[in-house]
Length: 365
Image 1: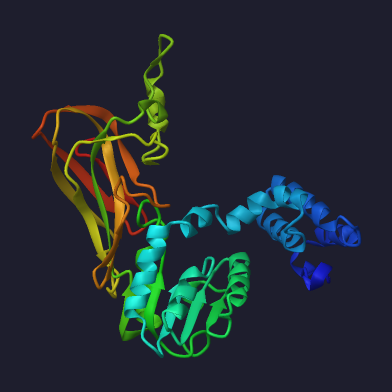
Image 2 (image 1 turned 90 degrees about the horizontal axis):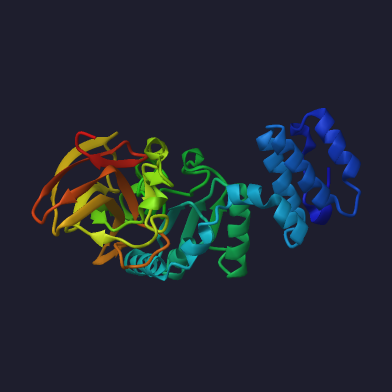
């Protein structure tokens, strides 16, 4: 069926009963709002993907309608998570990428990006002198917006947004040839949560020239022992005379420094836990290390704070170690129990990753 402003909705993928209900309201003046409410009904009946498709269609029809925006908010956020907003306002992150692209992009280069997002990195690559930029984006809604943003900034002739997952792209179809440079921003607070390692390996093997450069080149997880956290946010004890400590089994294994109240005391020098070369054609499926970390003061250690580090080459690096500010928050790995320490005491920790998550805990716990 044809909807408002040339935005079409293919009803063939919907069950007949649902398709008929949509047809019955399609000529109503408040069709977008009705469709958004219908999408919420479908979500309650566990038809999540049909619900999401209808909600996003309602949003496309009337993105400025306040009622539609409220009703479709959950579906839109699933496609375009809220972290996009603080990310593009992270001036230190933006400048690190801009400097790296200015330093390494050469005239005539084909630059490939994983994850278009707002199109910012692709446009920075074009501004740095790339002849052509190909950027892939698996979320259709974000891909649409990226195309709009890129065209609005006059770069639609040099930047192509491909609405596909990385592993669906092929040279000769989606890319005219193998790319000279790969750029991506796939890190999350915990470093590995957005599959940065396997995605870089795939792109390096299948879409980049043998001598092609990747940005960033190296990433690492660094951190230190901490105390002074607001215990009430992740640990229970006696409350009004009742022992609630068994509920601590439900405590999160990690939280961000913001969730921990923002305040902390350092109890060790910084250490590096894991480092990854993103130029590699293969990454370890997992790693397991044990560390001894010396306490630098007397007091109580409550956990291990972890932050991320990126090296782009050319003397350009980025780190979000406090007190440096970033849209990436340092992650706290709370210990099961607090540990009283004296200066010089060695705490034994185990650190492990499986390419998707990074885990840290006291040895023997």
